[in-house]
Image 1 (cartoon, rainbow, N blue to C red):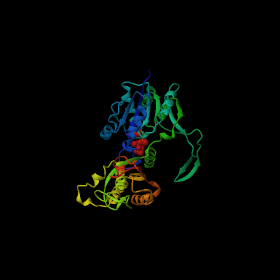
Image 2: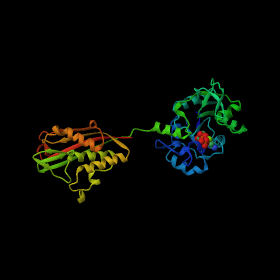
Image 3: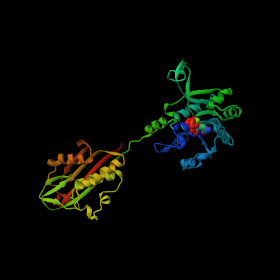
Length: 382
Ligand code: CTP
Ligand code: MG
């Protein structure tokens, strides 16, 4: 069984990615450090036996906190002043229990597809080295002082990516014999007369180099954050001549009993919004034990929930509320209720549904002891 190790160079300073922030390999992309994505991409391939990372001595703490919990890693070693210098340090560390094959990869390419690793390892059956590359598609020009001087010929030209895969002994001796640093390991290998095969690279396998690359990576890893919440509330009837439902006065032979204006439907919508945010419920935000909330209009509660939704960066997609009572009849008032909830939530009426049902004279609502309401809401992160 042949052994394959991955060697990840992560000792650079990432100066082109922006000053004053973490070295780029430790920056977060889509909630994960770049280096962790890169490690996982390699460790996910069944042929990769272990991974050697080369780090900068200033980054020990960053490295340790990033890789906590990841298995299959050899102890890190420190890199050199150039990329080639860092690769050599990694190859020397691997030489102690030399693998047959090595995949030398930039920490700054976190989106490496597994199929590229397949192709690289297959190519090593017939060549001492292989690397992924994409044919150059743009016209080429030589420029001087910001002006075009002479056209270039893009025929047969490729943009190189990593990992670059090699028979371990061949690339180690190429590094040992090298007289000057090179941009990549293919350059060192070719200079030593090693034949290096070109396999098909991937658009996804781009290197995070500039702030624009980070912006692209953030966009590509962004997940839709969609939340649903539910609410349920009950208020008993008491003497009176109207009930307030969704901020709308509905004439009735009774009123609803409760703290504030007892708007059972608006309370339930408020609870659904707090629920979607996992921020407790109306009772936690406005404790009934505090006198100042006695008789308060329920729209104060709803406005608070809507404010929290906005503060957390969400939009309300829709609200669906069902009111459960034998009477009063809700249908004639439903459009006024929808309009009022839409106004308070700052959304279109088409996103608010108010429906009603009886409970077939069963239970406390069937006996007309009170009104129950339930609501579902959906939020989306913007
Ligand atoms: N690298 C390294 N040791 C160095 C220089 C670079 O290990 N002395 C690594 C980087 O960490 C990176 C990869 O080589 O994963 C490719 O190099 P590059 O994209 O140039 O990264 P940096 O050198 O960190 O960035 P910059 O050139 O913008 O400073
Ligand atoms: Mg560099």
